[in-house]
Length: 221
Image 1 (tube, rainbow, N blue to C red):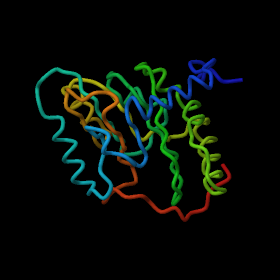
Image 2 (cartoon, one colour):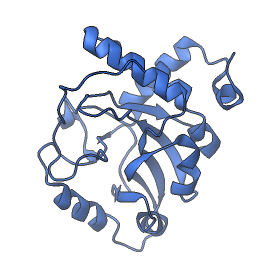
Image 3 (cartoon, helix red, strand yellow):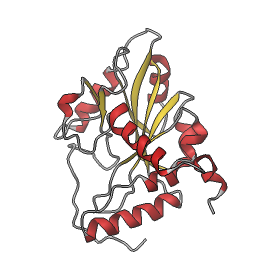
Image 4 (cartoon, rainbow, N blue to C red):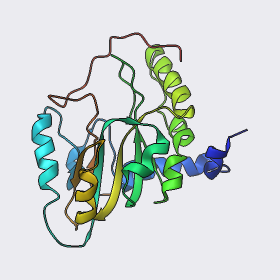
């Protein structure tokens, strides 16, 4: 039986989850890593090989302006958050996706992006759904990695690494000044859902945006 936190997701059929997963890639274009970035006209997040310092400057510059139009934006956190802390780091703007990644030292774990209907409560309650959306394993190591990731997600681990949100630049600049938020990058106001990619800045990427090592032991849980 699901606990009370999981109630918003009760009754979601597997077909609905499949549609949501299509929306994840098709509607907002989240890729990890981006295999066909050329099909998108815009992108949120750093490029592979980009200096982190350069990306942070680029993200800050994206928030300049005074117009009140709504902008799609990526919030990247300094450290992974527990889901119940999302309301304290979203500033009341609309949340479109919650980005999860279970941190395990020297183990590559999958990114999971959970689409949510703009309700902050749904964002907080999205961990079980994130566990369901983990990719199928290709070998024994990835099978063990996916299994431990699912266990930790269902336990409500501190695994939220970012949010895709929508709001005016003034609100986004206010968010960028919050403690715990490493960067906020906004797209131009005319960016269209379904025509931009999202690759989050990971908390452990400090110098250059590049894949981390994958030579550590995978824990049992």
